[in-house]
Amino acid sequence: MTDIPNTLGVPATADQVVEVADIDQLRGVLRSAPDALVLGGGSNVVLGRHLQQTVVLMCNRGISVAADGEMVEVTAAAGEGWHRLVRHCLDCGYFGLENLALIPGSVGAAPLQNIGAYGVELAQRLVRLRALRVCDGSVRAFDASECGFGYRDSWFKSAGAGQYVILDVTLRLSTQPQLVLDYPDILAELSRMGVKRIRPQDVARAVIRVRRRKLPDPAKVGNVGSFFKNPVVSRDVAQHVQSLGEGLSAHAAEPAGMVKLSAAQLIDQAAGKLETHGGAAVWPRQPLVLINQGNATGSDFVALAEKIQAKVMARFGVPLVLEPRTHGL
Ligand SMILES: Cc1cc2nc3c(=O)[nH]c(=O)nc-3n(C[C@H](O)[C@H](O)[C@H](O)COP(=O)(O)OP(=O)(O)OC[C@H]3O[C@@H](n4cnc5c(N)ncnc54)[C@H](O)[C@@H]3O)c2cc1C
Image (tube, rainbow, N blue to C red; front, side, top):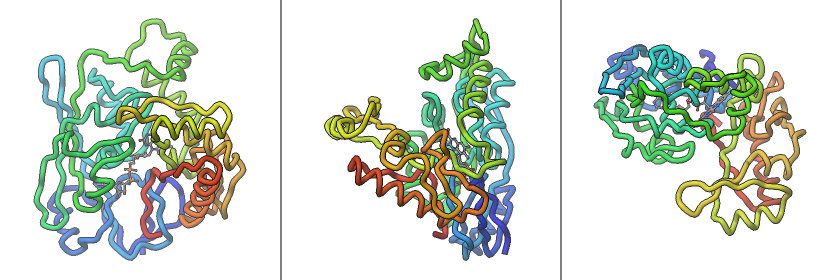
């Protein structure tokens, strides 16, 4: 039995944990363990105490670049760290990822939930990815349009879950700054930093400062970032929900005509900031984040999440959907 690394910091073991550095090794492991669970950094999973299966940790490395005029296509292996890739691109003068700085985890997991932050989603930068089909070891390229991207979602996380292992990801970035400054928090931070002429590097620094202030550092306090997705509902439902609470915000969302509610506000007003179950608790500074108080298990997190979901449903009639995936629970 071997421990499975995970940023929630819950005790979790598997029959076997294998670090995979290349495609041949991956094929070999999957041939003998086709039901293996593939992980990167374990920063978006809630794990049971023991997984009766093999866990594969993607450790393949490599970043390559193909120039195309002002644009570049950057291909990064699944086992690269996401934030390392963001820093590497900024250092090289390839812009477009700065709003996604400091998101934990691996490049290979980034398409799973179409990672996003501060007005940018991976889907806006991804050109294609390559993935290995678990059942026969063949490799297939998926264009962005074939990935079924949605808000914190993709085909790989939903209908296609477990069918493919993502091997590498190709992103289209620009050598010219493409600043996305829609978020007041980031603008306020840039102003606090005294930045006059904003460069992508400044945006990344501002994002990092805001994230460090708002989110618990998983190295110190176990968490997976947002535990719930923001609910996307029709305008009519949003109006009804807003009439049940105080000052609830609603922002236009995809598809057209839909509205995104703030899960944090719903939790705050329906459940408060003091909910706990076993060692799992709500992070008082941001109720969307659940934290490990020191001795939590994966089951504690699931039970706490269910408690919160029930309270939000009872007060607002809105189902809250988990953002991390659960395994072995
Ligand atoms: C403090 C904190 C802040 C966060 N902030 C954000 C944020 O702002 N935005 C955001 O979108 N997310 C955020 N997250 C969530 C998380 O960082 C991302 O979802 C990240 O992409 C997960 O990467 P990982 O390598 O840790 O994935 P893991 O947790 O290892 O895996 C997640 C899922 O993907 C699958 N998977 C992993 N690698 C592969 C692969 N190569 N092929 C196929 N399937 C695979 C796994 O089976 C699992 O189901 C945050 C997490 C933390 C702890």
